Image 1 (tube, rainbow, N blue to C red):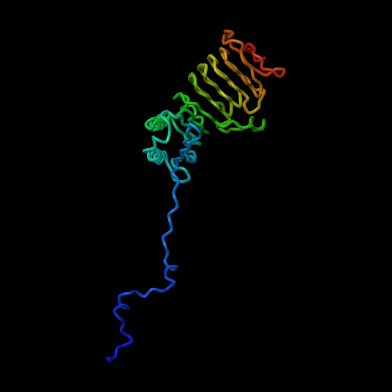
Image 2: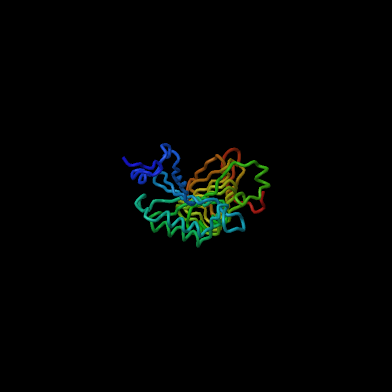
Length: 272
């Protein structure tokens, strides 16, 4: 028998690697990267869809806290909508939550066009910016600015842009709704089928023939004024009144809560 050097590995030993019995536990598998949520959220509620924008940039800046700009949101929306047409019925209504993004008519038109390409119809916008609200109404969209119950002292001293009056220089078409946490001034008509809900007063420099709810946060001292008052329904605070006919008096009128009821009177230029 020939001598074999114990230090020389056999053929099998040379081929097989030296693996520790506990090596499987020592092998590190790469951790799955967390999914990154898109900056724009698209959600469904019944037959209506909601599109939520992330927090807006601070005043005077182009990007928000996450570094997102309007251009980033445009690209995100296009990617989000790509190939999604089968998830909703054609013409489904969409409600945009714009946070405090400052959007002009051109940007809102772009949003509406992108949604229309996939058979979604932009109908309503919730916004904290008055400029965005005015631009939306100019495009015939309904707007909503959350109405909250405020302390009387805060209402008198607040400089919040939401509490300031909302000035709209246009006619509200049928189907349009305006909700604002402050007074609403309309230079134009409020057509039948449209409505205004305000926590403050409502002043219409034209024909008021839709629905008007002033003092929606519980302020029964609010006033509704119109050059021609022929509303289908009036509400002030928690009081409700329906006009007996759609014929106006032919002169400016105001509606106020007097002795617990909504009363309509001829507007007194002297303010008495």
